[in-house]
Image: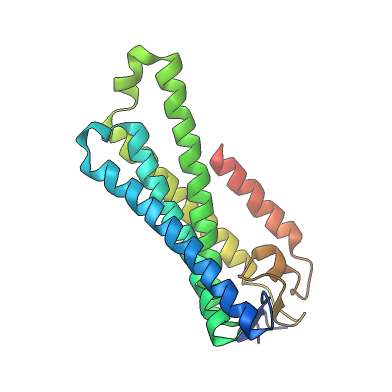
Length: 206
């Protein structure tokens, strides 16, 4: 039997079927999105322009702002567009892209927070060695490792999710494409392989 899916689009869970309420949700999401966008852009700009903030902690904080900017841009704009156009559909390719970038950015976020915790550990417990341990080259390598690990983890999760055949319909019980909800639409039980990938991701994190 072919492992290729016949699903060409998914239907996302809408906030409401009432047009007036959909407009209200659009305005609410727009305000939240613009506030988060402004906040992260201000953090990024403040760190980039102030040479006194060119330290490891602020370098990783700037990376974290980029991750947050990407995270809110993965699913919020699509939800806003669906509210305005009174539609709930997302293409198969759009769903793949959404899952990949969402997992990629969440994974990178976790890895960056881990590095920031290590940075504080060195600053507090080994202050005399801080400049040597957390030098510019090490910081760039750790940040690159976080982004690469997030990308690898996401590629595995996305590949595993969309290698299955969907026969449980195309209704995703969420307002964005989410792996657990997509796995509910699978013809076979794929949770075992997902657990294996989660275990690998955890090992990668450690």
